[in-house]
Length: 386
Image (cartoon, rainbow, N blue to C red):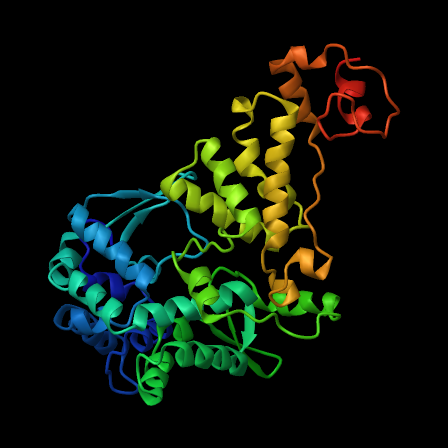
């Protein structure tokens, strides 16, 4: 919301069809076939008069972002990473944001909205934790993060597995909560006459369905436990998975040694998983190793650099892939991330560490370089120093 704009003015900027989507998402009661002016008036009145109700219909991620903004104060910006998908509040412009900086966006809450939600936001979050709706949402998002795209009936089967493991509510109560979940409202789509649901991290879920046809030897979906789904679906929008595995533990230690911590650490872990999904695209090979290449000035040897790259590749190959219905590249023995050296980076490292080039004997062009870098001689000392 730009400075000085009211909620009414923000809503007036939308087309009527967009206002209908907002009304359905928030569950506002508006007469059928309302004119746009009446729709705007009623939606604005609903947002002002019933904040506890519409806040209760939002994703946990949006609520926690809103709580941070309320705690910071009206018109105080937070500087945040760009997520894979925006918050609903930013999409419908109830929150202000500035995206002119490509490295981060600033987000803040207007005084108008602050006065409406500040008395309620922490109460709504406490309720979501207590009644189990947040955990259910994490499980739902987790199954979608693990599989990418699911037929709606398969999604419900997985969610029934989750309910059976907890039974925090009766089955009718759980079903009602699930059907009213913002995950279903935001992530459902139709394709070729069938009903699907896809991860919000996926820009084009239909491309995942098309891509799976190339790997039709994968006949079933990998089984995940409800606890694994909750692990995968926590921390939205920056989902991570498998950090407790041998590959994940090595990755966490390596990233810590490179200086990553807190939100930066989570973001790097998440980006490796997401970029591993698209491995084979033009930019994926570069981006999947960005956590290492961006720190190359701090890595003192070829051996250390190559070890870091190997850790990233090993972790990426152990993660569930959408095109493989949840199986990893290691399990399916395809779509594996394989290291290929970047010659410019090798040259830069040699220039920073010229002593590495001393006393390296000649070798066959395609054999491993005697310096121990792990690269071929022709791409290492055979090209750069001898």
